[in-house]
Image 1 (cartoon, rainbow, N blue to C red):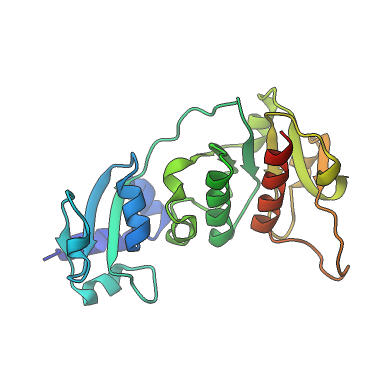
Image 2 (tube, rainbow, N blue to C red):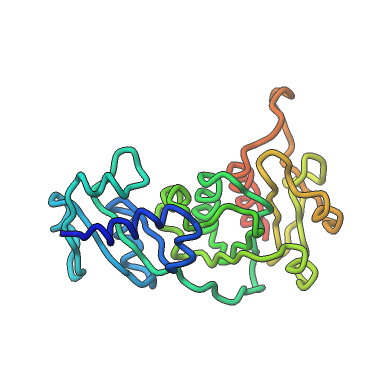
Amino acid sequence: MVSKNQLKLIKSLQQKKYRNEHGLFFVEGFKAVNELLNSNLNLFRLLATKQFVGGFLNTEIEEIEETDLKKISALQNPSGVIAVFEIPKPMPISYEDWIVVLDNIRDPGNLGTIIRLCDWFGIKNLVCSKETVDCFNPKVLQATMGSISRVNIVYQDLESFLVNTSLPVYGTFMKGSSIYKEDFPKAGIIIMGNEANGISPKLGTNIKNRITIPQFGNRATESLNVATATAIVLSEIRGKS
């Protein structure tokens, strides 16, 4: 049986301060857990209800009662499998390809989707402002669908990061050069802004290459969702660079 202290530890990992304190995070769902088990992440503990215990080979697993799983799950309807992993240390950033930079992204679903988009388009490095939601938030992890293990995510001060790079820097704005007319280089930095306010004015003053996704439909639509915009921008970058 899983002890009360173990349950308490796992439940506490829903909060960022305890994830940082213990250096652990958890992910739920058979498919997502399987993906991370096949990655280079270090497994701390794997728990599953009786129905799923037999689904994992060559991995130490503990059976958990469904009632106990509900106590620690971040989901309304727990999926039967929960795994705790060690938080990996960020790797050095590679400047040989495109880097996505996120300025104050607050919605966990948006961040998770953007991480998955980076994985899809082969973007290895994602740099986030310190105000951006934690990438090991359970809701973020649900949206990544396992891509968290294949993207190097670094949190740091964006101003100092941009000052120290020699790569061309592009920012997404409501007014700028159309991405469909832009000739993108083989490597660069693309900045995506906050859901409500876009790229912060302080950061925006140092961005010379301002690009936009032109609007063709109803002008009453104020802006695109940041994850949707990221998908369009990365598709154009990969198609032209």
